[in-house]
Image 1 (spheres, rainbow, N blue to C red):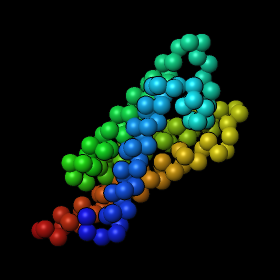
Image 2: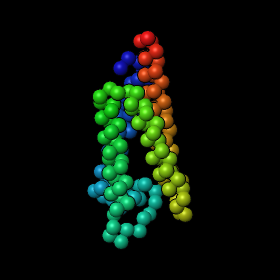
Image 3: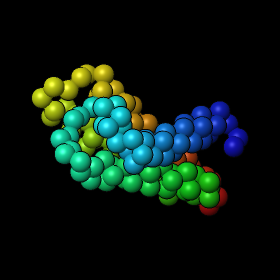
Image 4: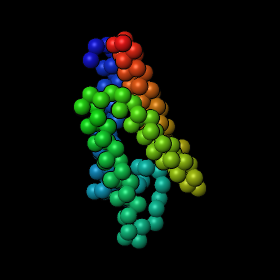
Length: 135
């Protein structure tokens, strides 16, 4: 890492990956607590399928982000983050469609959208610059 923007992007990406791992594990291990923090209520009647699907999705995404960051594949990380931005967009819309949603529950989804787009764009643009300088 050479400059301040690369350090900020690196630590923001690490934070995002770790947070997604935490959220995923929480949905798998404590589904009702995780559901309340997410911003919707799903009638479960003992069936936590939604929670487990959400949990494994977030766990995988966090591990994938950390893994690609760890290998140094910044261009692939940019693509992963930009493509992955669709996840918090859909999550935001699900919370927004909930008839009794709380505005505060939308904020983490908005933050995730912004982070994914900004970091994804940063990694793609910074690798494009380095590639063009190498020519």
